[in-house]
Length: 450
Ligand code: SF4
Ligand code: SF4
Image 1 (cartoon, rainbow, N blue to C red):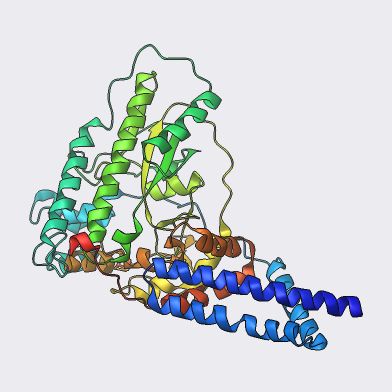
Image 2 (tube, helix red, strand yellow):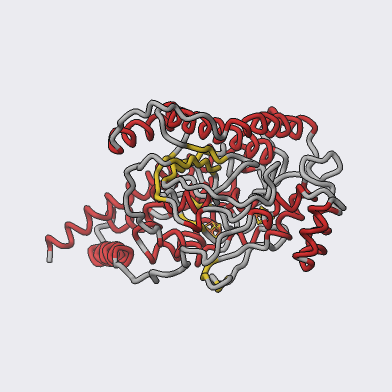
């Protein structure tokens, strides 16, 4: 018994030191994030939490030390226990191909009273009133919008203009002298090179029917059937910087989105041209000129899951990314996708995006059957109408998602806890609320933009 008491005593001293260090570090991280309330709270916990352990150790309260010891061991065991998680929180495979003409960006490009416009609303009369709502607002990057910022809107325009110049380069001549390359060699080169070009994460998948849009909805090819026969895709993410996202829905978000559409577009164009130069058919899928549904391709490549807010959530940067895709006939080496069910399970508990969404477009409910597929679906009409009012692509949901926090030891430890412990998933969201607030205010625009 004496040995156990001695062990508990030592344990108390070590625990006090560990708690102190952890919460001092936590408070430092919050300080660097300019989160005053969170800094203070972490500091307070770091000072108060070790007190009972120090008392037990200092005054040699054997029984008290043993209780604290047992408490920590039991708590640790509880968090390590593999409670069951449902395997089918969301279904993966859409039953039908998506028609790009129904996507909000395509509907926004319809010229009022044009033949295409009339034909579209003749086919979908129920969408007319919904779309009139966003047409009655100022519009994206409009000076009459809520978050007008002359420079930021001009910068976003410049990035969209630049990516527009790429549109004709998505496809091109294929070198008739095809090089013999093994899929292993190609894969080994492509990933690091894409990262060198600026991609954050890169992976491949085999293309299925549902990855392709049924019809094009934007640009000159509006209404044409998508008949691409490429067998494989390279999907990658590019990171949206924290300081630009945190001020969402203010103007920095649209500036950053446009910049990352440009960056991902440029990388996709380079990769596609590289493959064609080696003698393989390849096409870049970039802003305004897609044939594939990028989030589905990225998810099936294993880059993340499509969460409550309808965006691809990656394990490290959450939804704070933009996507790029290249399709090709080169038989890339693919692996079976590991479903990241723990991310969807966390979404079940978290609901933070639904709480903060200014247009109430995100559901707080469990996933529902949408056209025979169990999933979350946001109200894209009310979301887009808010964009047109704000003048930006809002991104408030992206900014507050606990997965969007920076890539550092503290947040990575939380992500690890979410990944491995179903119990931790239940408390991680309230913890995030405790430090950051349930409805955190937007951060200020970066200094140089004010
Ligand atoms: S905010 Fe929460 S519920 Fe929403 S996508 Fe992120 S993790 Fe899921
Ligand atoms: S972008 Fe804004 S309006 Fe749209 S779902 Fe996210 S929070 Fe809501």
